[in-house]
Image 1 (cartoon, rainbow, N blue to C red):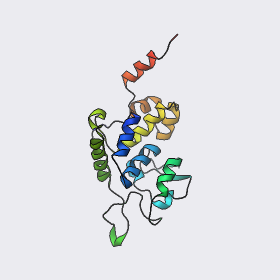
Image 2: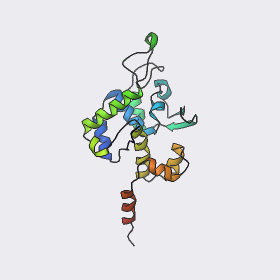
Image 3: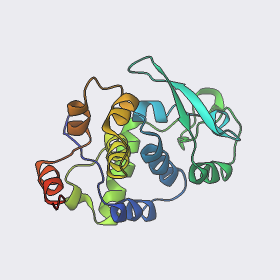
Image 4: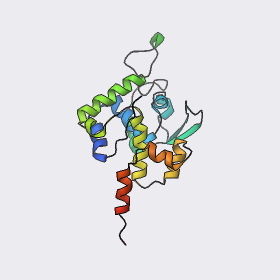
Length: 184
């Protein structure tokens, strides 16, 4: 599996949002707002989110429960959704057995993100983008906004700040730039 990168620049995040629409735009927004793995994000149903300020999800990989608070922007997007509470948020156009709802696949989510990055003109700049880029973007943006690395580490369930910094793609250049900010 190739290493994917976070989307570091706010203008690139905005470009991605403009390159997406409907279900796919919501997947991107929720992905960078929640920091969930794509396997967990794709399991969400309308009833998990509709009319709520937060939801609790059992993470598939770690089996840990995680409480996710919904921002006003995410609540606005969720309010626009039609369908039954039992429908997946990221519903596949191919239905499930017996006419049931079915979520899009991880592969389809990857295709959507890569196509959007190409349309947005940011694929070459970022390097490699994939489903995990949403989670990494969440962490990177929190760090950029000044959230303490130990809080981000706790959200991700990492065992050390060093792991989290490497995970969210803090580069040697960014560390060097930090030294240049100090004026004594």
